[in-house]
Image 1: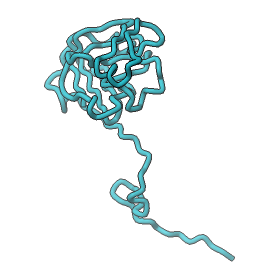
Image 2: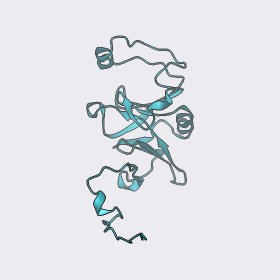
Image 3: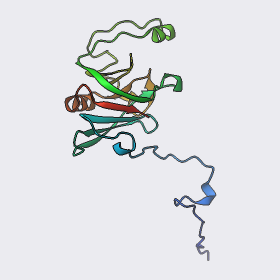
Image 4: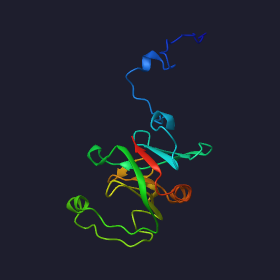
Length: 175
């Protein structure tokens, strides 16, 4: 007759069995953000784009509306710009012109008018840094991944929602 034995496995401070230490876990890197940690006031609105957790946090002017959107982020560290900026222009149906560095990497890239093949999706919000945007994408596989050339990408339906809520002058922080 065999009987199961009860064996207690010690766990660490967050409940992970000590026997599994050193084994990589498939855990989300999502982090909650508080606007007060980064800004003195909400201004006309506030956006914090967290490139580590691949999430964009939005607060309206009085803080009564808080939303989080999944994003794509720059595919390499050297393409990632961090710091404070703001939305300086908005456009529905943006056209796209690749930067010189994009063309150097891929000579087949060329200007694209707005439409289904355009990498900026249906809406774009231009930041005060040249060639850096928060925009949509028609390629939904990119969201949640390191896939952009420096921009923050959202699903088209999410960028349309964010676009409607934000105005030129919205303060932005890229972490």
